[in-house]
Length: 466
Image 1: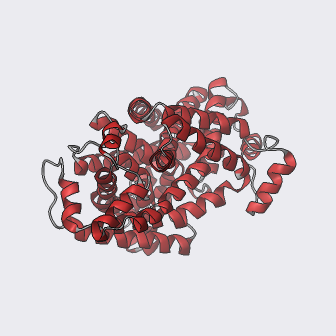
Image 2: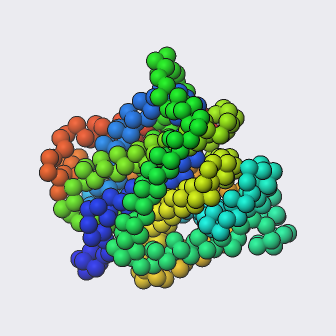
Image 3: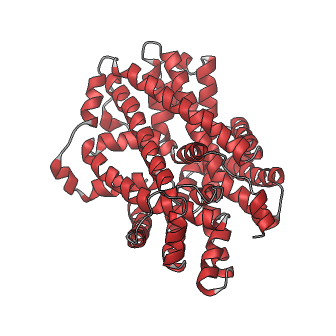
């Protein structure tokens, strides 16, 4: 990469802008529609203690590694992987070819997330206009509304047949899909500093503030105490359960967004004097706080509703069916619904921007497209595919999260900890750090590689763990 390219490369203007953008990429639907139910199902602190252990492990290895990998090359996965193989044997072609894998993973995940964002935009709009509150607690109406927005098909072929036979906008949520995607692309088109950084500086503080308001409000609802019992339970025998550790590991691993793409590309926008270990620590901390805040909203809300905790499964049904019923049944339910779905919108929007950023940056780096053109090309691909796969979104996301994300994380870690000479890896991590990381970091990286491989194997075995 030429010096001119490096000098003109867009980037984050402030440390907190970078941190908030990374928090935004990590805080997604897994924190909201999965984490609280997993905490309740596996015994509160019995689940949280293993979760915290994995967060510390991944935060002190994988997140640091991906930030440093991107910053060292000042490029996304293709350029970063290529720079590692070049440093090892003078040939960057193999690394660049391998770097395509996490890029494909990011694009596929972004496409699936585009469908999810269409649901969120629709429900945020309905909460503001009163359409959501008007459904009351009628589960037939609530379930039917979401079923109309999110049709289901058993196979991809069946999904495509449904879309073409009914017309692309005849079923599903096509209009809101395009609206949500245009909003995300507009933020990206403004650039890293003026678009992504500015948007996250607004959205992340507001998101945390809204969830604090919800947590405090719900704490005073009758029956909320039943939910807190699920949060603060500790069963020492449960800590010996392999299943508890598997799902705590999966939740933490995928929540921190280590997949060899989004964190690498955000790292590439960092200046050389950025303190990467400190930034990684803060990202892990605030992602965990966001997940805990969601748990302190959703678990007590379920407790106050009278629903049996065991009857509710993690996933879209929690957020777009059960929580609509629960929030509508509360005093001031219309206002509470607005607060909740606007907060969810900010969480989703910040995540999808990060997912699309790696493919957009790849178009800029590999094909020398200007920012606007790159955003446009990726946006068209995302829109077309997302519209077509709507009835098969769940299976699409499973393929990406089970196979491609942990593979991308493993490949990035192997490039940094194994292929790149150890001295160069440590030098990059410690550049800008006030307290240099010692030689222990590289062996910890080997542990992280094992964790990535475990995430892949366990995901296949259990049909997804995060």
